[in-house]
Image 1: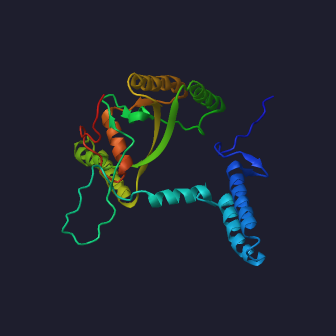
Image 2 (image 1 turned 90 degrees about the vertical axis):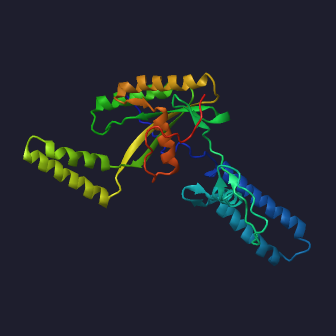
Image 3 (image 1 turned 45 degrees about the horizontal axis):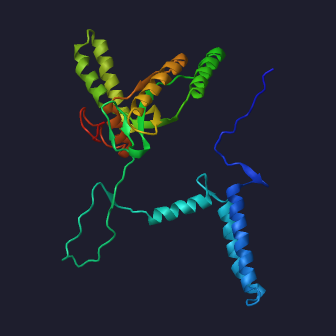
Length: 296
């Protein structure tokens, strides 16, 4: 008899330690209590109890809110720390050091731009992303299958193939699902150019109507396509670059049993991918444009 084991959707949820509270919440509660108790010991002989309560209540409320509050799925203490880091971080960054302003400018200068440090140092000729001291990363595009339309036996085979790949992992991987805009201008132009050459007038009319439909669809909607990427990372440079590519080959071999096609991205495709991540609204680069230089 098979037992059904329920796995929570949020597998990274922190464990509850005492009374349904996590370790982080208990630390916040404890720190707030220690702060209030220490203040009471220091001020009890010098400040009336009512004045102590006036100062203690806001501190206690702030500690409780920080411990149990959440904002956009993030605990409030993490959110506050992120806000403080953002407040202190540089807001203007440049690729190179900005020159000093001329001495004749009378206006009070603002903060100087900080250097922009990107995690990617370059892209090799084999399509590997050079992460500097963090190693290298190899990227592959993975096809998809419609799981819901498969039979129970086929679904079991798909799950088994994916489980075999997970059990065979020997390093860090990331499965990234991203959406990108589709440009139908080339397809529309091809339809319009080839419509007059079709062997039958009805086919030419259908091609022209389909081109008009695609034109109207592109004008009224933001057309998106889903892209699934598989990224493997090796912690160091040198021979580990070939290790990353070999791990992609192993993933392609194992996942092919589930009908998935794993296609490693060449250097030009990796360039275009990184560019679209920085500026999704920018038009695609022509072939051969070097966005991030570097080779190994």
